[in-house]
Amino acid sequence: MRACVRLCLLLAALMALPLAAHADWKPVEKVETYAISGQSGPELYRSIGDNGPKLGVARAIAHTNFKLTWTRDYQARAGACVLATARPKLIITYTLPSPSAPLPPAIQKNWEVFIAGVSAHEKVHGADIIDMVRKIEAATVGLSVADDPKCSKIRTEMTKRLSELSQAQRQASRDFDRVELGQGGNLQKLILALVNGG
Image (tube, rainbow, N blue to C red; front, side, top):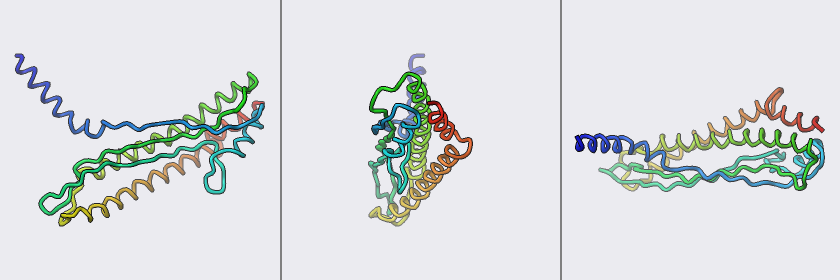
């Protein structure tokens, strides 16, 4: 009986190995803030416009950025090259506004609703980035390229796959922002509530 239990536990552990190989990393998520000033909703929003993260020619309310590096194990096997393992290191940074002075109680309440909504919006961008990294793992780990003993052709194939996934993530991010900032969108409502709330 004991031997049967041990065997079952061993089998369960072995079956979980491939899953653990993909799930054993976690992103590092951190928040950075930039200072804004004002004692009313309109003043705070104006300060966001003056001090927010610069994206191209415009400034944003908040921004999600990431740094992604990989530790990859390429192996030459019978004239082919295989990506045996790939471990990502993902650091996601959320940049959010923060008032530099205490706010009047009514404005503080409005601010808390506003910043909670903005933070939730940026977390969606963070989740999309994590999803992209998992898709990169799925699309590349185990990839094999024939007639590539020096593991050079495989890198060209990987670059193509990574580019497609990266472009898809960027487009999804732009589409999400367009909806959220558009007429009746969640961010538009948060801005209006902050500005019109006092």
